[in-house]
Length: 474
Image 1 (cartoon, one colour):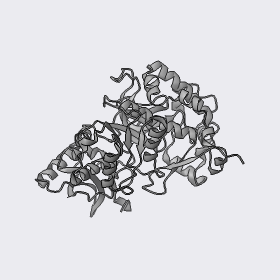
Image 2: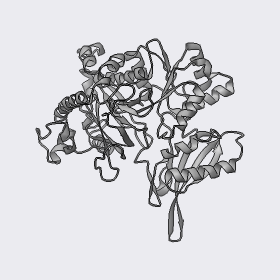
Image 3: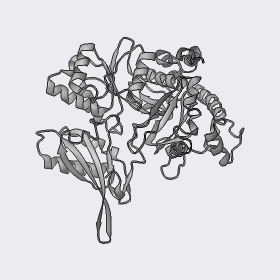
Image 4: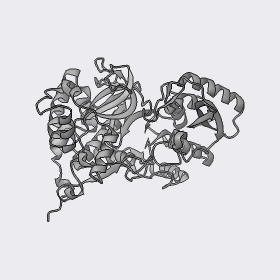
């Protein structure tokens, strides 16, 4: 039996020719004009659709939708293809466990190619697997190297990655981006559960960390520990932080982090299936979409109608490189909006489209008294007052009194120890949240670190919603 050695699994020259990493990307593809971007997208779109016709999951869906091979003649025909959602993938996994037919391969294929399994967080059930061959895996690393170069990383830098290398993607993603494609030394300390926060700081100061990649919640917790333990973060001379700011529309979270860490903070957007399709440049006015790798659409949350630039809706992604599994018109239900169609060149020199900060999950949206409420929209109010720790949790409950039924939301907000005028803070937050959310909510002030199990105390993304209606999340 032959061993499928990794070094033989790819045509490396062809890979970097098609998808240049790091500095090569910054000097070529990142500066394409709109005409050349459209040409690349059209060619790769037709290639991936041709490939997906051989995938039983997509072939059945497309045929059931009345499509035949040859109906898709250009990227303009993308709207003819039906969208897919996570529920479709979950049903496919149930029908053909453990990975589903849509992946296009299974563990037995490991005799011919290396395969890696990554997964969703699994916060509401069994983690959902996504398979990677070396092609998908290395392109994911190339994505990160591109973002890091544009944001200012250079060979010889040292990036600390306080995210555990397990089935979730964040830690692996930045490790791969640094080690394979950037010349940056990755320090994979893992989460605070793996390497305690004090030791994280000791490592950073001893080993010369000058870049960080993590969620804001943990980095702000780490800064709090630094203050308690006498570490001066200025002395780290951090070049920048690669983070995931969420709906920081007023810039309050970025301002708080930059003032605390004494460096620029750049926003990024990613998921375990698609890697990092969008990132900020140094202009910090929107996240550039890697249009040589993806086609982005924005769909109405209720009707799936495709919306024009500037309108908020669900992000629908088509990956132009992914074979296992193909991701074609995948509705991620991440709430976003396009802020630039690329016709006007960015100050950094790129014509790539730009999306706004990630605005929340449309499937985390709750309807209160006829108003759509996104828990992530609390960010500005909470981080905008320095009496809070910047942490919050929304709890939704159903109140019944006779025939009167009413859904209510309480926003639990952590308050720093010794914060003055707590009642004034409660009133201020309730007033700001009513404006930001469009509906009245109750604020409950809770002690610092009391929400740790939902925020920086858990691995991965912070949880912002507990829905106790109908027995959910009770």
